[in-house]
Length: 95
Image (tube, rainbow, N blue to C red; front, side, top):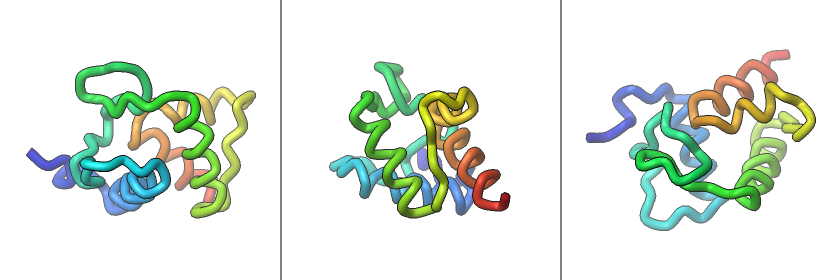
C-alpha cells in the first residue's frame, strides 16, 4: 500500500528531498508513511541516526531556507516524522 494517497504534495516533496539528500537506496519517496518515525528502530520507521539529522538540517536550510537549531525544542520535535518536519518547515517559510 502506497503512503502517497494520504501524503500531501508538500510531504511528497519533502520525502523526495530526504531520499535524495540521504541517498536512501531502495526507498521510494511515495512509500514513506507521513506519520512514521524518522529516527530509531521502529518497525514502520526509517531508522535514521544523528548523522542523518545533520544532513536533513543542511538539506532543509538549502532547499527551504529554514534553519533547524538543536537548542530549539520545536525544531527537535519536527524530526519526529515526515509530517511534523514538513509542517515545521511550511510554517517557518511563510513567516
